[in-house]
Length: 349
Image (tube, rainbow, N blue to C red; front, side, top):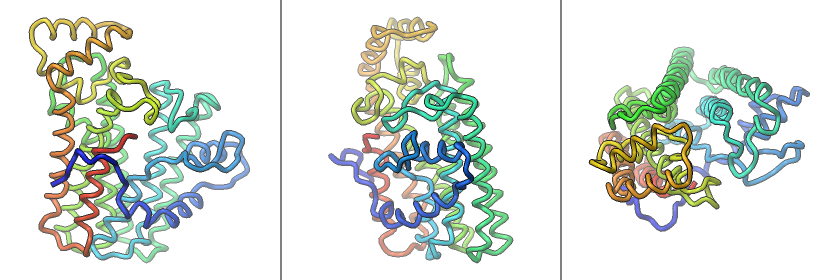
């Protein structure tokens, strides 16, 4: 069983195993076409500063490409064959982050200014769109890795479907803003698209590239969906109770933005009487102040929203492991999956 109370969140070993070749594949995937556009993309990916000088320590987790490669290896496949799909997944994810930062007007990501904040919204939109197209270009390389035409086309179809689901989830998230009656089921369905679709697709496509067994491939899809939901629920916790020095966000940041994260949805569903009235009044405001945030945090504590959120994240990690319990896997895979689950629901960032 996944232990959600480990003192230190440590990435699983496969993050290191693939790092060098994945990084090389990602850097090759972004053209050196002589336009500032490509410098912008390298900046966003964390490879350089705003002047184009190489940097270190500002990259993201690369969760989705690592999961794609890991799934391929886990079923006995040659993991390097999954690199083009892994690159596509990371580019799509980062395209969505560029647009999310514009949409939310977030000025900082990974402790430095966001792309739009440095170059402006119009150029950032164009850069995001370019990264989206580069994902498609990466998928063309699947055939060059020896994948059959049938499998390469199926991988492309799965990725395209996941992109659309992700956007549907983002739309649902936007449509839920300001609503006070989002159910837990509505929330889980929304994050199953917004976050779960791409993470599920990563494991689905990785298994497809590495295996011919349809039951095995489907098991990885289900496992990825559960992992995606666990990841998002924990992200929601970090958006409210995370360490500001690590996340770059003050405590209660997502409350102030009136985001319908799981702790908020849970609190709305379980608060009663006067507390419910307070929440309704606060979330009916156009802008929330420090006092509003403190009141919401206090009500969350009363209904034990933090523990319930952690419990749901742990349950979804358990579901991810259970989905693969009857699958024939190469040695050490289940141990690394347990490590992954622990990392996802104990990380500080």
